[in-house]
Structures are given as C-alpha cells and as structure tokens.
Image (tube, rainbow, N blue to C red):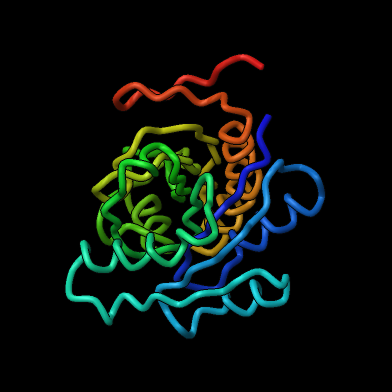
Length: 207
C-alpha cells in the first residue's frame, strides 16, 4: 500500500476537500493533501486549506483564453509538489489531461452516471433535473476524469432513494452524505493500487 500524495482542485467552498482532510487526519485514508489549487481567488476552500497549513494556490480560469492554456497552468502549478493523484472537489472547469495523470484524476458527481451528467449539470442543477424526471433512485458516482464533462470510467457508485416530498435541498443533503463515504473509499482503492482500468471499465482488484 502506498501513501498517496494528493493534489486537490476546487472552485468553491471546499466541503469535499474538508471531508478528505478529515479522513486523512483520522487514519481512514492512506493519503495526504500536499497542495490545493483553486480556479477562483475567492473560493472559501482556500481558507480551509491555509488553516491546515497546506499550500493553497490560485490559477484563475478567467485569465486563460482556452482549456489548453488553463490546463497547462494547473499542471505546472502542482508539479513541484509531486502528487501521485488528483482529486476534483467542486472544480468547475474542463482539463486537458497529461499522459502521466491518465487514470490518476478522480471526481465525484451527484448522480448515477451516465444519467444527469454533462455540461451544465452540477450541484443543484442535477438534483432539480432528477426531481423533474420523477426518478425514484439517484445517488453519486466516483469516476476518473476524461476529456469531456462526467465522461471518464466509473470507479464506484452509491444509490440514494428519492422521497416523494423531496426538494433539491433535502435530496442534496442525502446525496452529499453518500459522497462523503464513497469518495474517500475510492481514493483509498487508488492508494492500494486496486483499480484496473481498461477503456471505460474499471475493475476493483482483491486485497
């Protein structure tokens, strides 16, 4: 089992980051967050990072003309910290992924992909769409990051029931509780070298 050096990319409040910090500190995750990069200078996740005495960097998306230039700046920023893997934690931009990070970048999405994924479907937009569609079950998905939104190979999923009186807020709360369990579990599988990827198929190898 390897001790995983994690870079975390975010754009917002950093609740997913905080969960990863807590799991690492509590010994539930054989990893440490070595650097955090935000695509927005005003993201509260940066404050959470500084409290933990972890390097907090800003690479603002709006300063770059295209995805290629922005992605190059992100990966240049994290390179000195030599991360083994990258976790997206409410990171709102597409990335062009260098070969060395292929199948080393994880994201969590608040629905059961491939349903309710793609451009514009994030956060409350997802839960609103699930309720409009009359779904009886939703959940969350941890997946490797691909070149398109929510398109990479699926690592793990957790189902969450949709209640008849749900609002986007009540549904979001239950899905987020599932995310807090599932995301660290998937990162731990990566740390243990137990994820085998062939095309779109991820197999979880035995211990």
